[in-house]
Picture (cartoon, rainbow, N blue to C red):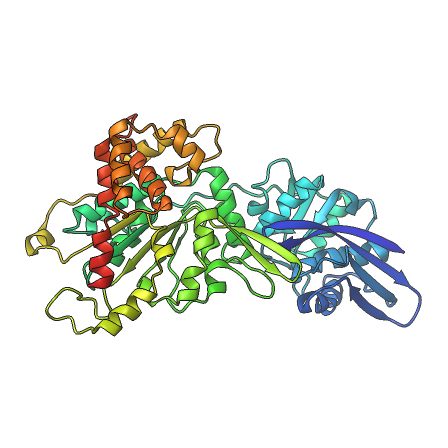
Length: 506
């Protein structure tokens, strides 16, 4: 007898419908799986056979052939276990064929017949809805994640007998319980911990309001990392659309285990020894990198000059396009990379450039500068120098809190949302050149100040646009409908060439 069961295979951030065909014939007992599966798929023969027997079912002593169609698509992971087991049960007439016509199934089997969590359940659920499947059976711990997809019936089960009962119509599928909201921890980082850096906090506020990239430079121990790690506390909450996108990426990589939506914006801080593939994605089986894991959040690169140049250069295209395309053979996988880059660097290898105690020679400084290419620095909207704070500033009793800054950021984001309504964009940093000309609304004096700066050779054409975007954000923070010369000058001051010269040339 021939049985057909529907499941799905992960292909980047998409899922492809897979038909598991199971054929039973007379002959010497054998169990063969074909259809371009990886080692985990081939090993499912032992898991399926043992799980069926331990769960109380009969394993047919026939020649069993399982085909995962379409055969040209590579299948990866143990998520095909449940579909294979259901196909064997239907082909051996232990389950009715009508039971698998309505349901798609996805999950890994344990040797006792229990179902285990699999990566990418949210992507599988979206694929099931797009394919017109009425319902999806998944492991119980993944049910809340799958239920995020509207218009799809989801059944969370714990074992093979429960799956069989649903397919026979003996029990109604259980609706997953609602996700529990997790309150923000009392020990969450707060800007109030930062002392003596009012200018840098202002720059972080502007960066958060417009989703701009920012580079912090200064001697070691001045609070660059401390401030950068608190930047996430002044970003607005994720919208539902953004949360689903973040959840999907983290689910595929196994960092989110079936617990509803990811509610906090991601903050990724990879070590400086990371490879280009680890930073932007790659591998023999293309997987998201840190740039995609930071989607709709912050990618923090501490000690920027210590990262390898190939790794840093690999960020240039994702920073501009908001996506990265990984090509392996003739197959292309695209991952989103709409993140905010926050970076910090010391001005020289010892960190004390410009001071008497600096012992770096010209070769050391030149080598330090070569790590940070001009094209990468040109993509940084704000360049902020953080000198050692004065002694009295460290004893301040009242400091700016994240809650106060967040209120101003939310107000600025609301103004941006109204202005960008209908464009599909959310922040000033995403403005295209055409929308920049149409929506910024800069007056004649502002354009004059920008032209004067460009004429001095301090800005590239890309930098010209980035200054205008930052000026628009500063105007939003002040509640101004138009961009004035003061806003442009403030943006120029936060991108001053002297910061780079002092930080990197010493």
